[in-house]
Length: 478
Image (cartoon, rainbow, N blue to C red; front, side, top):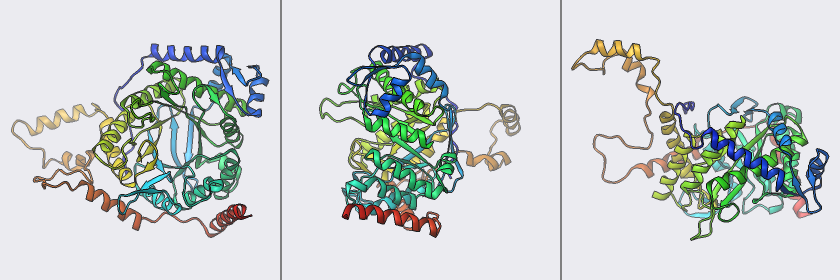
């Protein structure tokens, strides 16, 4: 079982003056430039609240409205597991929690290491792995199985996830219509919509479209999540030089404008509804034109964004443990470690994309297993140094004295487990000439996939989920 993350190291990228400048610039842009908003319900909410709305759907949002939304949104969020047990307390001060993917466009095959299309059966594999790993707290169901018709990918992937994963589920949907159906499916497991809202074991993920655009799909997802009482992540993905200014401060300001605009719509739909602020201010690589997931600048700015959100007292949804590399090579391990270190030092609360590879085209189960160990190592680092026991230690040093030894002391015997003993990394007296790390990781991964048993849902719930699957499949063949 992984240790609880207790951040005890002072680490800042933005001081208070910089945070205030970014906040003020964001409010000014919302008032003077505004956002392009799609969807009748979203525009109506903003218009009724007193925003200036023109015929093109450009909306200017007064700063007082932003401040009101920041006051009404909850500052603490409790997420539950599938069984209705408290799993995570999310706030501006609490521990960080990590999540991987239940499905993706491609998967690095756990048996042979080949990159291939993600199939429906792979969801069970990813869920089993994430369910067993102690430092993976949630999983993201995105609806991308190659062998499932696109029209029902979201719902089928979610059903497979809910059947094979006992922890918290983060989900996204491919369209507006499937969102309510996912919530309805989750309500079967929770025992009703009211109980699901009371103890949410799911939370939604959606995005605006940079620069400064909230399409109908985004506004509707915010409204549906709010009215159902389901926590929602709203996460701009800005690429510097492409969809955001080629400037660190500019990218942070634009992300903030877009996230705050989404927050206003969300809180107008239902004041006090749970909201999670996310930000992905990355770069557009000018050599390849891709949006980088492994760039150092990206993770610097994610950490900076977490400090802006911390100043609002809101939970922050970050990104780490991913790579632009296609396979688990030196680049993948280097980028994954750097990102996890950065995010554990930052003020992020929920961190997604563990094991995501090839700039978000695939997921690598082997990298997820390695990342779990890296997270465990880094958790020991960010605990920092306490000096509460210094008087006791002074007495112990005095007792042992010069040229003494601590190996036989009772204190050593009762405290030696406070340090981390890695599962995969070697500290042998004599190391072999060939690395044993990869074989250990693969052996552990395959053992989990073969042997870990996810607690089963009751037969009545499974039958109702099967009815949903049949109904969805019939919809395609009709």
